Image (cartoon, rainbow, N blue to C red; front, side, top):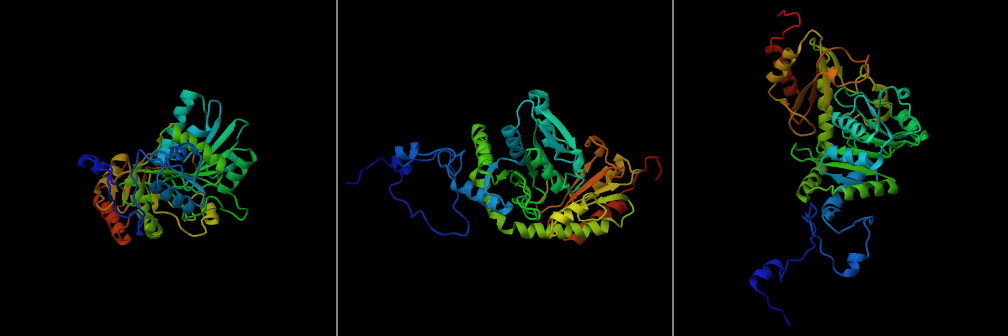
Length: 405
């Protein structure tokens, strides 16, 4: 006998539904905080460490688990946790594995907010922060208290490619966990979980999915990928305790963009090479930085590990020292196609100005003196981007530090 309800109740508990399972190009989108259990047995016969723990929206849905599985596969790992930003994913690693008295190592060219976060942990909780030279593995001297080393390939802003093999070897010998910020390589330039003839691997990768996986400059998301189940469970536990989660809508958007991610990465990589070759011919620049260039620090390590020849879409230039801040700001302001903004990996090319004197703790003899400008290549035609830079260089009347014109 069919039970009759008021219309209001039927709108919530629909008596008739379309068939739930059809095959589509994109997987179904699940939006959920509450997840319904079929029975008390289903409720209690489960554990948070289950591969797919459908218990509450923060733990995951088919939408978030599908993207996580694909990111893990992309990077050569096994397990993936999603976070609302790349920095949130970084903080998840730090809060999971570091405690008072632990020593953590970070590269001098690391992502700035990670360094700031570790400084905060040092001030508040007694974490011991050490900085190493990424292209000199001997500068990494872990003590018995060392717990974690952060790697970045290539490094932020100045794009040195690290001596990844020796750094990972030294870390493993000292039983130090290795975490790689893999945003630049994006799982496409090299396999962080098998990057040498000796099958060397990092313990975990962090990836700002905001960049290449999203590809639109409109989604914030991060990930942590592992192969080791024990490490994954440690991260997963902290992930749950901190209530870290992402929206189904954002997840579906990133999932949709994965299909053409490699095509975008390849195009931006090739465009960056085109700009690199042109930028090196311009007299205003003291130095052009890109890991594929033989003159760039760490080039030999990039060549050894990134056997695909891919190198992301970032190129940095250091203006000659006689160009002051006002002159370089004027150059950036005259660019039309390059928009002034943080991040990268989207369709629009971006430019950002940096003063390395305020960013580096160690002496970097491989870098020339002068202000740095980073170009993040979008999907525009490289000839148009070159013309944009050329126009800015021509129209801006550079002011020399001596006051001469």
